[in-house]
Length: 305
Image (cartoon, rainbow, N blue to C red):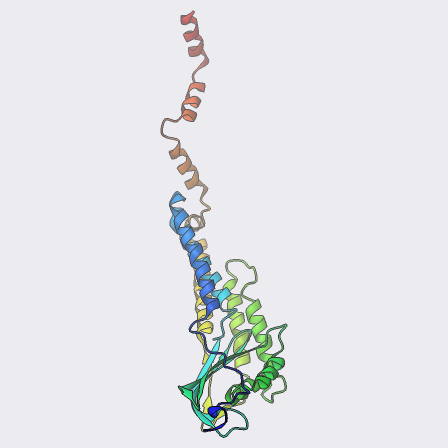
């Protein structure tokens, strides 16, 4: 029997990986609630513009949910590798684990999962976040990781993104993440969100292409590729671009139909208002009485006298 049953008592417990992203779940729940509320009030909208109003609403909610979600996700760039590596500093213990790197707009996440999870009398399931957004100190977070005694693979990957690292990618990722997160929410005309979204993707892509330092674990290396948030943002930008081009073409060929889509057709509204007044109502009958000729009104009065 070894000291403390083979465990390392001076290391704190790991930050386990949560089953799902709670931030994304909250955002999706809020926008689904707004969509459900809109569906409830949909029958109260009259005319042919009901369907177009609903489509505009769904598109707006989708774009809003995408722009807000990708601000907090950490999978703009991801990568995994399975390797046999040292577990802790000053220890000869080797573990077989999956090492993951997840880069977002606000920082980097490094995960470590054992194969199996239980090895050397410890549960190897770590998920550590190192922020680099404005107002956060990445090097300070890295120093705290050193003080906590995080596993060597996590510290090795996180060190690649420090300010003093020879890789020199901290500044590029930090600035790219800042501008990529600031550009899409900028208020703009309907034709501009697609262009702004593409600019945010370009900013992030330029930072990704600057990573020249290999992340090596023995004979294997950790390589990253674009993640779900990047492709989701690209898809939303393409959708917005296609809709913008469609609006421009429709405005050139059939502007009247474009007015109908955006509920700008006043003639349809006046027609609907006239039809609503067709049944015998007190207001309509009152107007008819006022339109009686004055001679007839006097004649009726003379007969009664």
